[in-house]
Length: 187
Image (cartoon, rainbow, N blue to C red; front, side):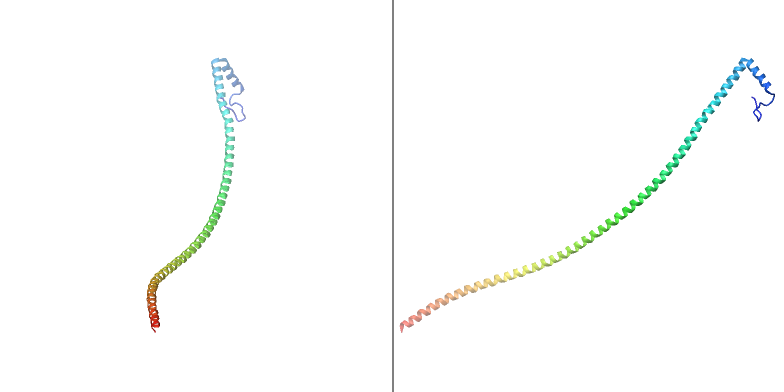
């Protein structure tokens, strides 16, 4: 292996020594072939590294692109989260307002229903009082009807007795009249 100085010139012996080495290698075809094969192998090995440099450069570019996309995604995520938080806050505010409105309407309907129930209870109590009054009036009317029926029977009995008495009076009157006429005729 040949070593080099800092200025790029070969170390040790000058350029003639290298020329001799070259002539020795060229003069021996097997050694020359080995050196050429070694050079081709080294060149092939170096090509691999050179080929890797291009994909590595692309990998770096891809890494930068991925990092930029990740930053953009993070920004979009933060923006979306902020919008979602705002939307959720708005939805909660609307829901709270809707609940308040619904509760107010429910309270108003409950108050109306309670007022209607109270009124219905009062009307029911009035109706029950009226029914009790009507029942008392019906009982009173029934009592009066019973009393009237009893008086009517008594009146009918009295009328029958009166009719009997009138018939007796008519008989007595006719008898008296006949006796009176007979007395007048006898005079």
